[in-house]
Figure 1 (spheres, rainbow over the protein chains, first blue to last red):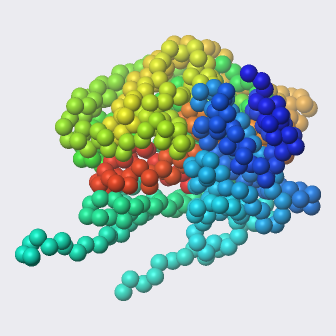
Figure 2 (cartoon, rainbow over the protein chains, first blue to last red; figure 1 turned 180 degrees about the horizontal axis):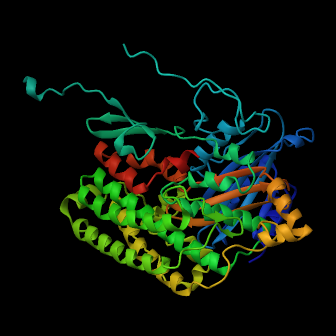
Figure 3 (cartoon, rainbow over the protein chains, first blue to last red; figure 1 turned 180 degrees about the vertical axis):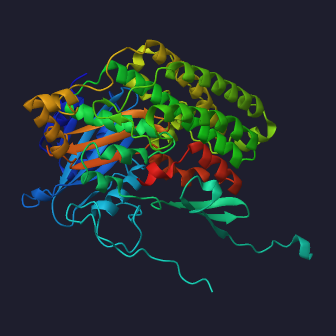
Length: 163
Length: 396
């Protein structure tokens, strides 16, 4: 089988940027506009179908705000038949980052995307129910952003009177 | 039309299960819409135990994170310890001494046994079989006592170090464990004898909460729940680490993916783990349990007091911590509940830039609301126990 990253580069051309295999992890930085196509391609890739959606998380690269790529969404996929892993990284620009939701391709992305939205404020367009997962409704800001102070406190909503 | 034949007016009822409910295995909340006792719709909410593990990690040195990992899955904390340390060691390209590897295997498999004992024991209590709980928790207590003698703690061990282990096992450890494992086997046999063909247990679990092979993969299941649905996937075989490819053991797989199968797969895994522990104890090599790599290990006291390099090295490690190279790494281990993954982004400083923990029960609980739809309310309790949701790692 050809190198998976080369296949991706051949299939998606410009949309696949930097690739590396550091520490044996196949990694590709891909364009945010093509992410759903790429996920779909990998899920249905006949030679090595990536059927297991393992993880999705966001990363805040605050120092890269100026160059237009502050946030990154990282996908980890696994192929059960071929026992192979791949990591996709997508850079998203702007103070109000948004990206297409992976739920239509991998339904299990639902809660992972809600968590990334909750903790980092990344919007997933087309997500069926994009609301906070770990923090409560009414929480202000996104705690895993690098500019959110670790010692900041917010009032925890208390229960109302019962009588 | 006579009154008795008239269709009675009825409406559905909303019920909160949790967040604080003895059958919910932690602070989890599921709201169900009931038609009689039948669940029409369900939705879950998590976050009650969220303690900002990831944010804390970004503000801690690599060593300081080890105690935090204890609190992820507190039922089998040693697995989180070694899973996390293995990720950092991968980032550092660091080989740990063989003795440390084998002790980690023994500890991880003991944790797997304990995790399964807790999972099955409490699940059986939920569906009305209390005796089994004592059979399991009695022997689990003995494992705890042996591990306490090694690590100094009963629940939150912080036993592994980046580069090896905090301390070696005590001389009689192997014989103690072998004696305890005999009792564990007896306990498991007793429980299997009580439940495997038990009419009540079978009625409560067979064909309850069925997850097909396709669903299990689509919902991101890993570990025993995936294997109960018929997918023979185990990272210990698929991507062998820690010499797992050299041990003789099988991956138990079931077919139906119901609550019964999930329980039985775990029971069989206990036997397999015991097999691995015996082999690992038999092959335990002599030698140090901590690497002497100066990037992670404190130099021996003699060098600290006797040479300038030793002193500087000690100072640097204490003041500046471990400094892995820039890069990103994902390391996964087969925890009791499935794939436990750590994604670490390092910017070359003493603190990780970002740590993402992929807890195995996160996808399991995400799918829970779909599994219980169409079931009776009492089945929802039987199902959640068989999925083994641990709120500590779910909410992080």
